[in-house]
Length: 194
Ligand SMILES: [Zn+2]
Ligand SMILES: [Zn+2]
Ligand SMILES: [Zn+2]
Image (cartoon, rainbow, N blue to C red; front, side):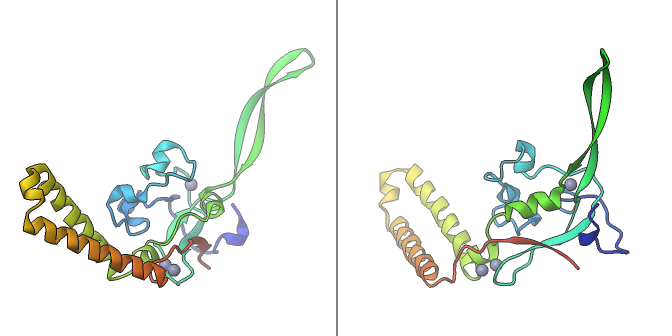
């Protein structure tokens, strides 16, 4: 346990790196696209962790949450920090192989997540009303797929054409917002609560 990041007098529960015990991974960053949106494909974690389906069995040492540069904050996470683990290995001493234990210092999920400075803020990536717009575009595209499946006559029909125009216009709105910096990538930093 690292004293410097442990608030005295705060009783912590289990380490809960991805919100698995409080509503699932979809709550980690708002989960715009459902539970799978909390996946972490570029963090080089074990597969079950990547998919956000994993909970740590250690006790939490630190309370922390994600901050972006624009002042958005994520939910408070209770995380494990530095701890010592005992590892066993064989050692050849005086002609005999014996089991020897060593104490190894291991970083916890706080350090793990902090080190990655993971991801970008979803609220900066999809600020209002562009979050709604993004959802609408996806719905329109799903409808367009139905027109496509229904065949050429449907695909070239007036309603389908109107929908394509709407998708185009919405795309331009998104581009404009991106160019203006309204939609932007905002790196997240994990900050302990004091
Ligand atoms: Zn931002
Ligand atoms: Zn942990
Ligand atoms: Zn933000």
